[in-house]
Length: 349
Image 1 (tube, rainbow, N blue to C red):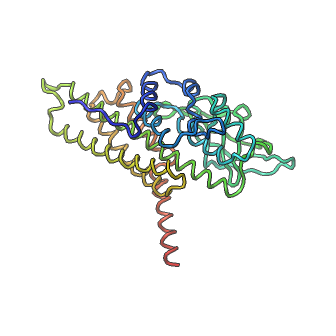
Image 2 (image 1 turned 120 degrees about the horizontal axis):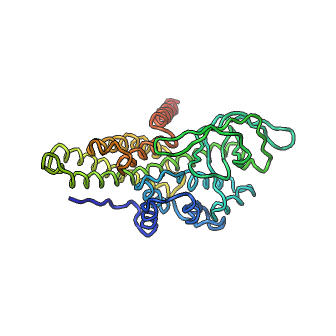
Image 3 (image 1 turned 180 degrees about the vertical axis):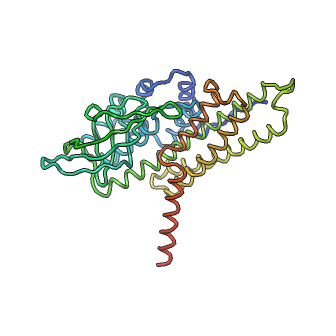
């Protein structure tokens, strides 16, 4: 009994990304050399000018191999934020550097940072930057205050406190105590900041769902292979009806998630202003399905599933960490509840 998933966005881009990620030695330098940071950057800004659906082939292939690198943050969210601030000379120059692999920008969104004018055209920053994904070196950090989008070189930041995630990623927290930035480092101001951050975060959330689908497909494949090749008391595991039923549940959950994510990604690719509620619902659904499939795969692998030497264990951890990026299920439950309350209030008015 064999099974091979069908990619959501098949083609040369998926095949080449799959081979690179599956080689076992992928690192951020390779991604810079391949120009993945510039895939979504417009051609007139030095990039490839591809669609979100085309980039999704890369995201799905990377998820299939549990590539624990800041792919979505650096290749999707950061370019989107810089493109929204393209009126800034600094942002335009940095987009070209990203595409050429000469710079890498780590976005940190939603942290509590206050900015006050310093009297010389710049700003003084006070607060904390939380959860910067520095599992790959970054030349800059890009973050938002209430009304500004600010860029700062990592060399200018104070010493960080580092943490290691479940899947091996390294994140950092920074405390800003009077750090100064000049006017050229403020890329965007006003109400446009919140809109740009919301659009980039929603897109990042959908792309983490694409990665999750890639991981879930690989989990189904590997679980089928494991049950087909292992025996207990002289009987092949794949002949046990209870295990087969559990595996079918995994497959159905995967196919349901795959269809949903594909549709939402295509809609977002065709229209960047697609219904943001779809992104929230997709993220919420994948958070539940991803955990269910990951836990089932671990249990069906038995004791072997608890060892990090098994690809299934690494894929399960990758799935759980993808579920936490750009908001966990509680974040999206709160967001959807607030939206429903506003809709009801509007109808009542």
